[in-house]
Image 1 (cartoon, helix red, strand yellow):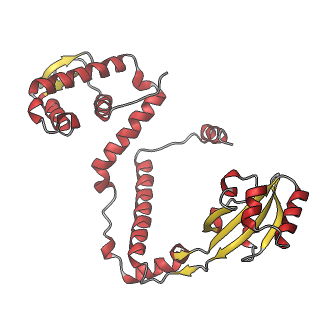
Image 2 (image 1 turned 90 degrees about the vertical axis):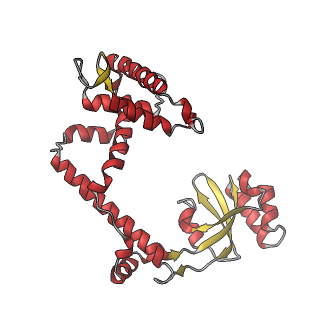
Image 3 (image 1 turned 135 degrees about the horizontal axis):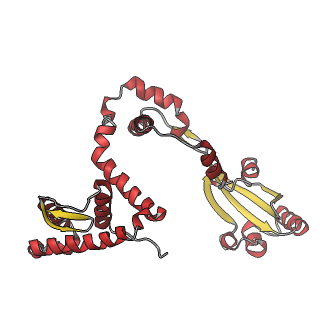
Length: 290
């Protein structure tokens, strides 16, 4: 099956037909009826409002005549009718596309009734200070490590490079350019950047955390290779005060409150619609990712 590509207008129409379940038969409000559905004046008005926002008619709204609206809507309905007749809406991949768009559309319509608006300006000073205390690390600039590295395949040559660095026969930049297997950093004198410890490769972190500024360290066997490191600079961590970060704290607390409110809403909806989960089938699905 070819890659699925949907235009929003088509999706809306598929959703409306699928949800409302238009049936064959007379519709006293219909301008046109067809196998599986109909179009009313209200439908065409809705199409007109949608098409007005389409860039095709930007600056030339006069071209959006009733005839254009009617033919566009009917042509679109014919494509949808054909797809429904071929049961495309029952294909799980297409259903996933439709449901994703449907949930986004319905959410935008219902969100204010599902979760009450939270005004961050109503947070008390006490609430904000408590949140800051509980999440203090979020408002701390981590220590930054500036590191240079030489990557080599074998232990003995790595030891020889260490000896040359320690005796001054090579500086680190020159040794990296001559011996390092890491093509990206060797052209920069072995420089692999300045970042927080957790931003380095996980296997490197124990070594980098133990480095002393200005000293060459290694060779360290990491995986199948041997590494020589040099810490050229390390900044101290900086804890920002409540006052400095108050605006950020308001936003963060609002996010946490909304997240909790939405989770409560989802839990309530699961009860409202009597969700029952087949734990055996769910476990089998979960196992597929292991």
